[in-house]
Amino acid sequence: MDEEVMTTHIIIHDLELSLRRYLSLSSRAKMDPAIKSELERYGDNIPFRAVTNHTQSTWARTFHSSPELFIQPESIEEVEKVVNLARRCRRRITTVGCGHSPSNITCTSSWLINLDNFNKILSANRETGVVVMQSGIRLYSVGEQLDAVGLAMPNLGSINHQSIAGAISTGTHGSTLRHGILSSSILSLKITLSNGKTQTCSPDENEELFRASLISLGAIGIITEITFQAVPAFTLSWEQTVDTDLRMMNNWDKTLWTQTEFVRVWWFPYTRRAVVWAAEKTDLAPLPPPKSYYDAWLGYHVYHNLLALGQYIPRILPWVEWFVFGMQYGFANGSKSSAIQPSRQALLMNCLYSQFVNEWAIPISKGPEALKRLSSWLNHLTPDDPDYVAHGIPFSAEGLYVHAPVEVRVTETSNSLTPRPHLDPTCTEEATLYLNATLYRPYDQDPPCHARYYQGFEFLMRELGGRPHWAKNFETTGAEIEEMYGEKLVEWRNIRNDADPEGMFVGEWHRRFIMGDGPRLALEEVEIGRKKFRKGGVLVEGVVGGFADGSESGESFDMLRATTPPLLNIFLRVKEERCFALLRWIEIRG
View 1 (cartoon, helix red, strand yellow):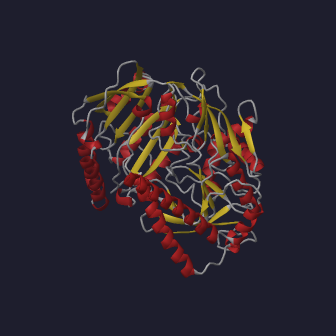
View 2 (cartoon, one colour; view 1 turned 90 degrees about the horizontal axis):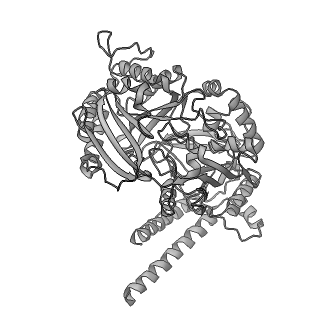
View 3 (tube, one colour; view 1 turned 180 degrees about the vertical axis):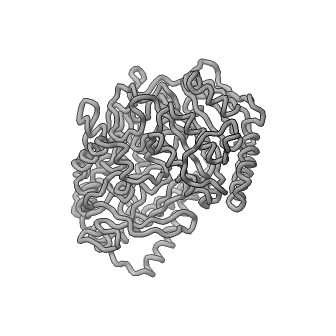
């Protein structure tokens, strides 16, 4: 490297350090005096990595919030310090990873912890497959690092952007009858509770806390470390076939789900076709998938703009389904494509655009009935149609046009030997079928079919004995969820309340769906308002210790806020935004 280039790198490095120092000091300067006072009482050298100017958005940009503090700890000691400080300052804590859940479960106006910098694999034993990792590591990084030592995750969902803690906390799953949900591979974990202490739990130690934390929904504590059972790295040979949905359903109870280790289906309601994707382990050399216009720039934008046109002319959506997916998979029944890829690549799919996702778990035996009834409803089928069945959905589909496909996946947990999470949505008597009704939000605009489609879809799922996927969009009531889970939900609440009696990890989403009608907890966050966000979606505002009518308790963090002059706040924010822009430029330049 010549002297001029080296000098430039040094200058950029010094600029980066100065910018980060300024942002740290700026955030500290604007921090609530009560928090600064408590922070100064700590005589340790443990960092408190917090900023005050963060806006948190879900990946789909459906919900946004402005936390008082955005904190990125890098060690268990830092996590424990955050929890202890929050308890003393009477704050709620929310933990977020990539924000891939499109609901408001991670929205907060209090403290938001992100573990992206708490992301190391601590050990990986190639002989036993036992891997110990920090909880903030993303699944794509897990896959890459395990592959380097000849290991792999036994199963994956459709995406790998989530943190490992977020994936297990919401019941993430893949599509195979030979594996359960992701949490079934967890051997033990460490979780920091509201008392600031980190506990280890496993099937042999603190088993009830372990079972509750496997699907914790972020309401029990902060998962900090995970011990995971990996498998030897493997390659998958996959083939996908386009055919009529009738052929797929006729094969339902025969070999559809058992033909290979991994099977998933994309169902297209208007063309009444299905793509069956089947993959098996192989020792063959990799073979890349065929190139498709759909995966390129042109296809991406053509489809996006057709969806946008469908916002104004919804009746074109059946034609869009026929055209786009015919171009992608083939217009002729029997069209096939195939590839050979490492499992960490083969099991994934491109989620494309901002979207709502509403996924339910139902008994696998109910699958054909569910798809036929949904098809009859969406297609307005009459008794003279050979595919007609009485749909029984008490909502009109007149003028209703939806997006495709519906993702169809399976998992098997009824014979699992690992402890079953209290809030596991899968079936106990037979294998589980997942139906995922996706609705895209072209250019971040909600589709007009959103409310009525999901109203009808959820009615059907409930009637078939279904339970919603915790990380997705659903409007089923808390009372209905109590019926679905019964004593298991009561047990989970009891464990949660013992671990966090003041509700440090409880927010509006938890109260609405799983906490019941009991009294508000001291640190529980209450939603006090929503407003349209400038970039689409809604901005959620909450208050700790407050009430839904906007009144406040003596522990409301709004009563403790510093009174920084508004003009000074604006000035500091503008300066910080410029600093963040410079930092992004530095990161891009490398």
